[in-house]
Length: 247
Image (cartoon, rainbow, N blue to C red):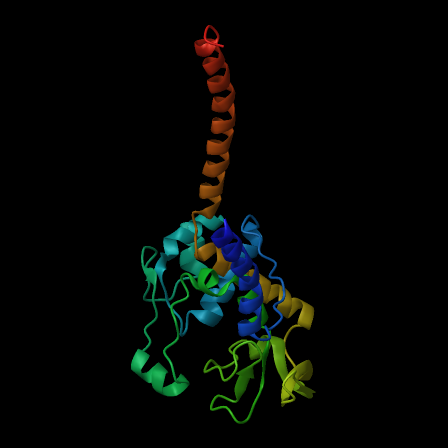
């Protein structure tokens, strides 16, 4: 009994120790993910192919799977396929990974399941948090991913922004810089609200692409739960019938 009490006491302190070791966490904005919104997913697929697929592959996704978003095979061929690609091909890029590692410091990761590994909120915040930094080789940095090797590929849409930092003193008395706000210094093709919507569509598509069958899985799960609920009632009354002479 005494051992169990000690174990429970130790477990009570585990969340506190994890919080202390985790340090300060970056605030993440909520991503507007809705995998039932086909219009958003179609716009996101277009954003992905126009802005991401130049460097990043999605080797577990075939172009033909975009038909699940309500697009016809001809629409995919006319609007979303590169000249050398076929409808049944996977979304690979003709990109030399050795060159990319030399240019950016690391090869661009495959984005097939990036929404599951990073999280939709992380992606949504990250894609809206690039700022000018002349100390970086690409001229860009990111609040969410410090010293990122990726340049701001959607700068033509968002425009150029700079980051303002303020100095704060932590509990140990050490002074360090903390992000305060962004300032837009050069406007892009769209407003900030429109850019946020475009990024939201892109992240929505990435969340869908990470598991295209999730809608069907969820529907199947609901049917299974409904069946179990009905079967529970049948099993209950069947049990009462079998055991009525015993009880």
